[in-house]
Image (cartoon, rainbow, N blue to C red):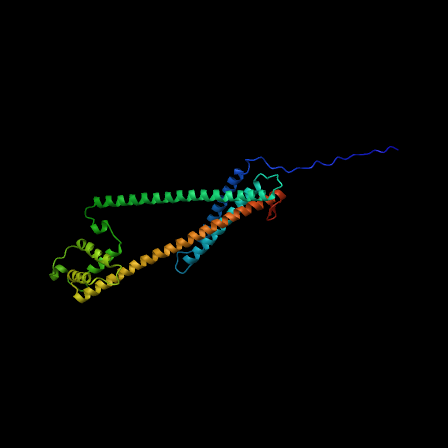
Length: 318
């Protein structure tokens, strides 16, 4: 009986070897991930804008308040930013060329680095688009304002009967204070009928009165000499008694200081809101960077493990 001896050759051992140098970065997956993140962001922000319009109302005591809407809008924008860059990073990590290497630490770092590249490119592109958009809006507003001003000037020139007060209307607080000062008193006769001394037109008096108010706006009360001069001027122009003229001067100065303080409070409130928004935007972008890196690492792990992602019972490419 012949015995046949079969010799088996061991299977060839696969030796891990690094890819050639110079292929550390795959720009294709990074660009695709960035485009995907920006596209998702646009879609979600459009949906959020429509959703926001559905929960607000121009009617009084209807819909959400401005503060609640601002909080919800900021929270939604932050979630959209993080989710979009997570998806973009996942796409870049899963489509990146895998490294055949035994150094898993280096491979993991480069997977996350591709997610960081998606985030960095997306932020730069978004900033460029935002700056160009703001520049376009400013240019359009400037052009429209110039056109309206030119049309108004042409109309005033074409109609010589147009009063000067209608040709140029000033809304400065000092001008309003001048109006309050020089308004005729209730039941008082006109200066000409009362025989009051001529003190010049309103246009001649507006500048010195405004300067007097501006010089004392930071003081708790008017300078005694300015107060006496203004009261005398009001009495001459309006026919009011001296005591009533002094009372009108004090009231006008108090209202001017209140308007100035209100403007300062509004500016300080806007500064604080801008400061908080800036910090929140920076924090959101930092979280977006971490989300993009984490998404890229997850995508690379699914790529290496050949994980099939199933959503709503259907196979999806993501």
